[in-house]
Image 1 (tube, rainbow, N blue to C red):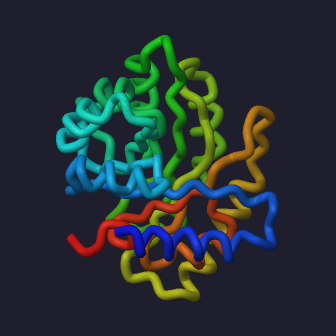
Image 2 (spheres, rainbow, N blue to C red; image 1 turned 180 degrees about the vertical axis):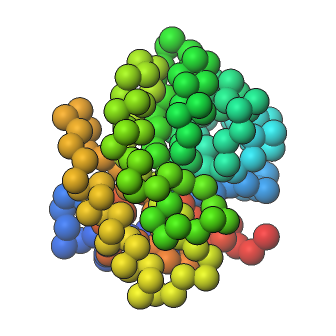
Length: 219
């Protein structure tokens, strides 16, 4: 794992060295991974972890609650899971329905604001979540009215079959879209890029990459 992580850190350093404005969060996708593996990654300099499956993640979050870990929910959100997600995670990357936003807002403890990213489906792939680009402005307006949610940017999940030129086109469009949204409080985050395409994503302006296999190895 150490070699894997060092390789990614080196790639990040190389890809961002000419862009002083580009800050980058490396999120280790720890689904199906044990707490010992998470602790090893933590000891090697990663403190952002992403989980896809709520029931699997809750025991891990409980066991590691005294560690300096920021938890990101990066899976599909079901209505009946909103309470546990709101209570246990600091970030949600996959918000794509106002109904879910309202439930997360309702259940977020008063002691925190839940940071949310809106998932946008730019390539109209019906096999994955995300709202249409045309509906984004309305979604942002509605979310920013919810006092316990903190709108922090966009999340992009490309089609699994996308080739490099398609990925570049998609990520350029995502960056332009994020750049067009004005937010007085924060620079908006752009969560895009995984093990196989994170270098392209960084080159096109990603600020959060979500890497599982590239860190922990094949499942």
